[in-house]
Image (spheres, rainbow over the protein chains, first blue to last red):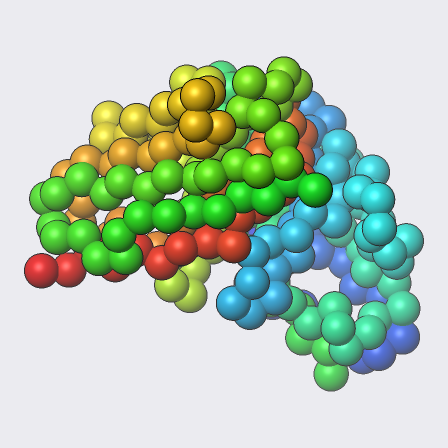
Length: 110
Length: 116
């Protein structure tokens, strides 16, 4: 099954904001409000940071926010910090009871 | 606090069956409202959903995957048959909310290498 489309890399300076896009189709991102985002530091398991497009799990910084327009979901990180440097993955429910991930985006904090 | 721990061989020969178990503590595999499933990540690559113990499978892997839930031992298992080098990956067990809304708990992951 084809993955959701994310940029391979993004970068930003401390204090700035960045946005990572996640593009799918009407069978996944566009059709359901079941998009989630995960942060993965090197050698670690992914950590959920957004679910149901816009919701943050307990304990996740409010510097992380999610949104969706049409078939594209977005993750915005404001007030970039060095500790935000990681890989970020989106995922979505797909018609037919399936889960699909994005290819991942490497965030570099300059 | 829920904890998930993968266990199983770290090395599997090509054409054989990969078998992993996820031991669940702090919750019951019989609880409702979520699935127990598996995700993998080849070295240096992205995440790939494998399937759940409730019968949902990645179409690209469906013919080779079996995921079962053992309520008596509070654990669930993955079997992937006819493996090749392309199946070399870190395998994560996970708790997944209904509608795949969120994978809210992940195991630490275990590297399985397919090699003769």
